[in-house]
Length: 85
Image (cartoon, rainbow, N blue to C red; front, side):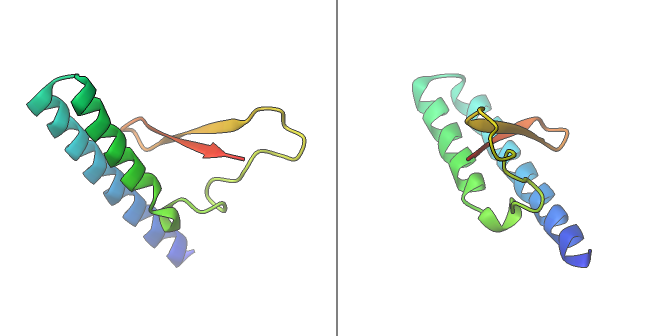
């Protein structure tokens, strides 16, 4: 339980940090192809922190589910992470 709470705290911090960077990119550059590419890179960096998004917290779809992806809403900040099967 302690590890899970620590992971949740670390995940909350990482998501908050990513959202801050994304907001700054949008503030500095507006919504442009370049800013969207930078935002995409920030989201990829967040998703690469696999230790923060284990299958215990984000289980894959049940066997036989025909949907190729699940969407997860992370925190109140509404960052969406795709969990592919």
